[in-house]
Length: 86
Image (cartoon, rainbow, N blue to C red; front, top):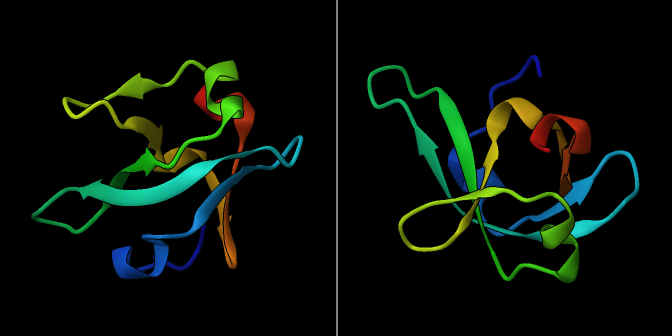
């Protein structure tokens, strides 16, 4: 992704797979590198049944983690590559 989105532009958006259009949940929070502001991971809440298909890691609060490197585009939805998060 050429433009770096601000974290506030991502929180609350629905995460959808690029390949199958499956909705996984909503971005609850993000993790980033403090020194550079580089986005590292999206933390997911309000998950759907499709989240079980991808076996994501969880943080200490039990939220699913999607690496920001899997994000393909951000618009009305956050589009992620399913193959990059499996």
